[in-house]
Image (cartoon, rainbow, N blue to C red):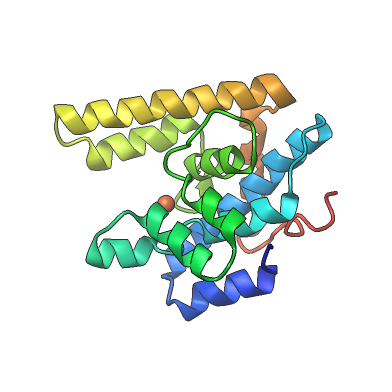
Length: 189
Ligand SMILES: [Fe+2]
């Protein structure tokens, strides 16, 4: 079961998601749908609607976790499960860390999130440089960020190898207005 785009957007507003996280989520969905479309053209079975909704909802619990602590990916997964959207939950739950290196919808959303800094599409390197600047406070946190960067680079290599994706091409998506959704995956089938 996959919710409509309207439902997803309404939930974001109903839960009081801050505007900058809403903008981030829209940018991630734009990137994710583009990557998913590339995979589809290369012959992969990808559910475009699932990718779009999961991307929109991936940070649905981010604000709660900033306020009260907790793992926002796991909290998001639980929330989606409560609404009966198990497949969305599985993807939201893996948007920080993937459970496998399989090419699937979870990998697409995980990668797209790492290509969006605030609401701009950037390279992995730029995104992780920013994370390092903000969170690389000591040896331990720096090592953790470097490990994350290595994992994200591996995901990018897998996507490039399996679909011919050109990572730099995604930067062109910055030319598309912030709330544009391509078409939420509906027509790109
Ligand atoms: Fe997140």
